[in-house]
Amino acid sequence: MAGKRNVAVLTGAGISAESGLGTFRGKEGIWNKMRPEELASMEGFMANPELVWEWYNYRRSVLAEAKPNPAHHALAKWESACPKFTLITQNVDGLHQMAGSKSVLELHGSIKINRCLSCAQESSDEPVRYEGKIPCCSCGGRLRPGVVWFGEMLPEAVLSQAFRASTECDLFLAVGTSAAVYPAASLPEIAFESGALTIEINLEHTPFTESAHFHLAAQAGLAVPALYHAWSHCNMTASNNT
Ligand code: BJW
Ligand code: ZN
Image 1 (cartoon, rainbow, N blue to C red):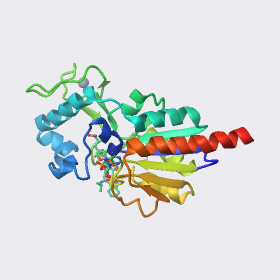
Image 2: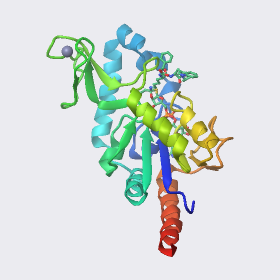
Image 3: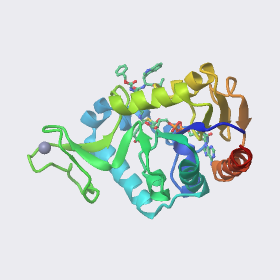
Image 4: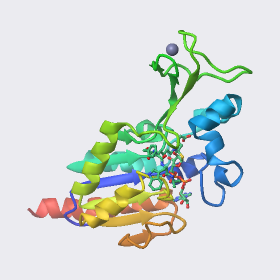
């Protein structure tokens, strides 16, 4: 990793697993029990808003107790130490920011935000709790979580920054993502095709594994701090010698 001064990282649900948050896919993933279209699409929300709010409120309550783990902390340190560092996350949990990362490209929004279906106003007040009725905006419109569901567009400016960083970086890490959901899943491939050194950290193989230069079959909480130490060791040495 010596000389790699433009680093981009894509994180997924697996990086927060060691903080006690559930993943979508994989052995313990929620999609083993529920259909994604039921919980993470506008059609699912329209058909059963109570169920969808119940799920998001459950996740908000788990998140209220959750803390960033060593992988989140290592990425925050990496950002401060690296000349050009882009952190791209598919997660909506805010744990990167809680660990001290200053700039985070949130591809799929934030679970802490509510958005009104009528006036589109966003609020990040105390999480709305589903208590038998669907939360409403002050305009009377129905609120939804401020996340990106299947079939919805990702925030355009955020996505284009993520594409640019993946194209321009010289080291790309894919951490705890099944690389199954587009357009996020195209970012590691773009980095690989653009000539970056690509490293995947995942307990399981993914569609990206074959293209990655290295696949580290390890927990993110162990592998990311170890990689950061290795990177900082060889890059501090390199900069001291020049
Ligand atoms: C560990 C670990 C540990 C565990 N250490 N590792 C091109 C081709 C095919 C389909 C499409 C395409 N373009 C668009 C689509 C459709 C669709 C899509 O991709 N479908 C595929 C499933 C086939 N994409 C979309 O609809 C997207 N929108 C879009 O493209 O708009 C344009 C458009 C609009 C209309 C028509 C056509 C195009 C939007 C996608 C939104 C995804 N939303 C969700 C919910 C967000 C809100 C919420 O959190 O509730 O995002 S779904 C869910 O999946 C969530 C995640 O961010 C996302 C990715 O999951 P992630 O992060 O990878 O987690 P997991 O659980 O899948 O994997 C965890 C991994 O960690 C596992 O591999 C474990 O092994 C590993 N792990 N513990 C290391 N300790
Ligand atoms: Zn409103």
